[in-house]
Length: 325
Image (cartoon, rainbow, N blue to C red; front, side, top):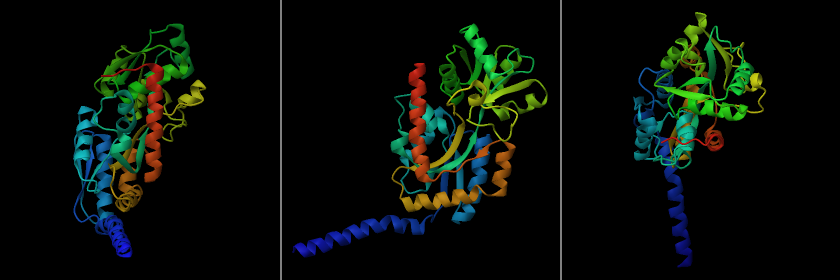
C-alpha cells in the first residue's frame, strides 16, 4: 500500500508540474491584452502600440493595447490584479508604478513586489533640469550655489506632486543640501509655459517637452537625471558629472510585467517576443522620434530592479521626509 501511495503521489506531482508547460506550449491561443496606464496617443502609448504589433507577429496572435489612464495608474493595476495569472493580460507600467508611488503612498491597493512579475524592460527617458536661455543660472553647479545662497527662494516646476519629476527634484535637494520650492503643474507643457513667463527658475521634464524651445533658443538644458550623458544630447552633462555627485540615477522607465504567478514558460515566450520587437525598425524609429533610449532586462533582472528601485525611492522619501496623500 505504501508503494502504491508513493506512485500515486508521484503521478499527481508530475501532472501538476506538467500543467504550466502544457499551458505555455499552447500559449497564446487567443489575443493578449496590454493595459496602458497612459493616455491614448501619448509617447508611451505610441511606443507600446508599435511594440504590440511586432509582438503579435511573433506570437501569431493579436496583441491589443487598452489605454486605462488616470488615478495614478491604480485602475490599470487593479485590472491586472483581477485577471487570471495566465499571460493573456499584461501591464506596461513606468517606474512611478513599481517604485515612486509605492514609496510615497503606504495605502496603495497593490504591492509591485507581490503583484507584478517582470517580462522585461522597454525603454528609458532621461529627465532634464532646464532654464530659460537668458537665465543667470548657467550650470548645475551655479544652480546649487544660488540655492544655497538663498534657501527656499528658487522655484522649480514639476508635473504633479508625487510624480517622478517631483521626487527627482526632492532627491536633488537632498543630495546637494539645498532648499528649493517645487511648483506642481498638470503637465510638462504647463511647467514650460510657467518658466517662459518668468514664474519659475527652472523645471524638470523630459527632453521632448523642451525640444522646440531649445531649438528656438528660448530654453537651455543644464543636466539630465541619469549617470551618463544621453546620446541624443551629448553636449548636456549628467547631474552626477555636473554637480560632482557620487550617485544620482533617476530616469523615467517603461517595462512590461505580468500578474505574479504567471507560469515561467509563458513569461519566457512574452520576453522572447519583446526582445524581437525591440529590434523592429518601426519601433526603433518611434523611440528615436521621442528621444527614448532602448533598455533591456531579462525577467529575473527586472524583478531584481523593481526591488532595488523601490528601496532607492523609499530612501529618497525618508531622507526628504515626504508625505503625499
